[in-house]
Length: 538
Image (cartoon, rainbow, N blue to C red; front, side, top):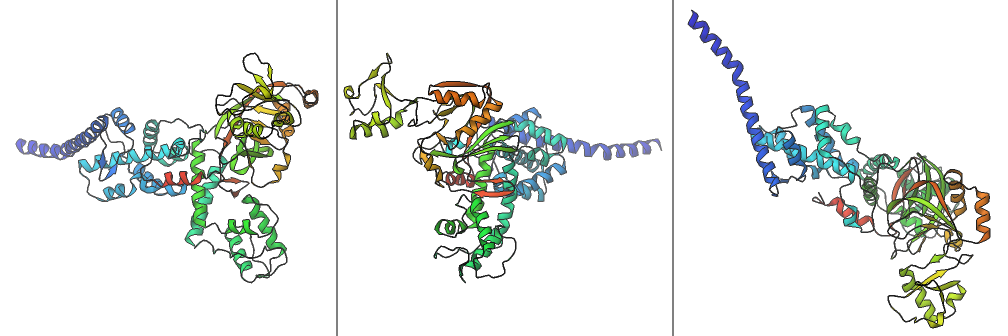
């Protein structure tokens, strides 16, 4: 009897302990598979799992070494949430296939032995950290696409993010918290979803060429197509009474469309408006994706009070928190002398500035003009200065056939002809770019304003001066106007610097409306090609 009871207890213990022993053995085998792949990565080898490359070649070893090679994705909720999140990557303008989604799904459907469990865990970790990095910093390095994009890139620790997200079971929240806080990002994300739906519904039919349509005209072919086009983009809310007449109601809706697309808002349907209306929905989707990526490149912290310059929009805006408190037209660099993209801090202002002519303008513009006309310098109030002793040199004593290493400084005096106008706003940078006034005010009437040599010309600098004097200077506008009238160069140092962000956005959200602009520097395609790459800078 006693022996029988012992046998019974022994069997019960075996039933209880055996699964634990088997589980422990399986876990050890999973750990071993992870360890081997980590060692391969540490040795500099490229590791593939079911044909999928592990891209986080430094982060994967760091994460699993800290976990003693233990699998991290033990909770089914975490796994399910990540798979669902990655499947929706297109909502952020990214590609789900970049994050192992299909292979992960295949493994989840299969019977998983120790090796499959290890493979699944590492693919999930790689997908999470890769996706988190793309949301936080952008998928591509901007400098590899366009050498003149030098926007600040953020830092982040995907390993800590992964560890925290797994332990807190907050996969979705941890990723969404990385999205740029700029209001345009969430707006573009919402717009992208709407434009995907438009594409699924067939987009819109191209409007044929014809005479400029004006209010009151009848066109039985084009007007119905224009109605359909404006309804699709929600510039028109209700169907008009007469589908063939270009009515006041349609003209008003067209003005709204033109404003959103950087066109002259006259309500007429001419060549430029027709070309804009006929841009396919697929191209607009690509444009939104490109600019969501650009917003991922810039700093999350733009400042509470900052200046925001959009090169492609030819506009400068001053923000206080999320409110625009000042908006001005600007002129930017020519396509062959592009205004660069970067962030800096405005620290001082110069009134009645001298203009020291930079080398690019000197060799490409000024010297060729002097060769044609010896009186050119005098008519422009430009002096030749000896850099060594600061003495003035006569134009007749200069060799104007020089092609490089010009030994003198050319400097334009303050005054009405000065290329910088009455003021320049300075924010130290390596590109010698600043914001300044200009005597060429007529150029601001042009819809496309690419006329400078890289600097930013401001239509109404007095408005920006007035704003800064009230908040960032120790002198008021009355004194500033007096300094300007005196005609002498005067430097005003800001009490507190103000961040300035010079960006290039061809699509953004303003007051819940999506805006599109012409890609004046042909920068969008390079970003788009990089976004479409299945193995790009990862």
